[in-house]
Amino acid sequence: MGERSLVEVANLHRRYGDVHAVQGLNFRLDRGEVLGFLGPNGAGKTTTMQMICGVLAPSEGAVHIGGVDLLEDPIAAKRQLGYLPEQPPLYRELTVDEYLRYCAQLHGLRNRDAAAAIEETKTRCGLEHVGRRLIGNLSKGYRQRVGIAQAILHRPPVVVLDEPTVGLDPIQIREIRELMSELGDDHGVILSTHILAEVQAVCDRVQILHEGRLVLDEDLAQLSKKQQPRSTRVRMRRPPGREVLAGLAAVTSVEALDAETFRLHHGEDETLGERIAAASAAGDWGLYELVGESRSLEEIFVELTFGEGP
Ligand code: ATP
Image (cartoon, rainbow, N blue to C red; front, side, top):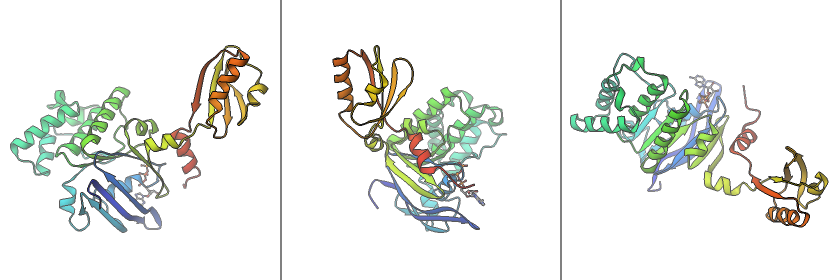
């Protein structure tokens, strides 16, 4: 196992009767990395996270957390983990402070350490002003923050968050995303989400799960580099006829978006932009916008997971 590797998953399987929910997963998470887990409903994201966090036994395979075998030494392995499940384990009748004190005890933090950790975590999660409020009376967004707070309270190297921004308003989403990016600086974070923009905003790496198998495991920076534009949007004050645009080498079809804007579909061609600019100068088209459009993560997602199960 590599030195920076915080989580290592090898040949992980989980069956529920006849349902093969997770089928032979292999991946690792390094320190300083935020890994986004994507997949359609039922792809096996929650099942995988539960196995990584030791709340569900795998049918087959191994999980190491910080070099410790989760099945052989679950207590030592789980000490290095913080987990926000899909339904956070909150006690509605406790105040935020009481609940976090209780969580600190569960994590084995002693008095002074516990008090310092609670204060720091409340600040990090924007909970400074609600310490005395009953959890049951908080808005959903604030309850979600409390759920995240219990996951990071003991400063675990690995933080696993199952759909952390579900039900939050846009401002809260932005704050929680900032928090996740920040956590990624010195922890390893795995988060599942259905929001593709969230992956693009906070993750370093994306994995797409489909019917229990990884169909994509890619560095986001690499992914965008590899995505050669397949279409180019051009805006011109005095556009030529469509047939002129369609006649440019490498262009396969032309879509008119409005009187001045066209989308040119084409194969991979690094010189097309340059050639459009030159043709515009020669023909006085008044070109004022030229944008290469890469395949979005959404398009990649749909392509890889289209036609899924039930
Ligand atoms: P979602 O995005 O809807 O939360 P998911 O990717 O988290 O989906 P899982 O909840 O891991 O998917 O489910 C994977 C598969 O395992 C599904 O087919 C689901 O019906 C099945 N499954 C999950 N839990 C159980 C269970 N306790 N008993 C039987 N089948 C289960």
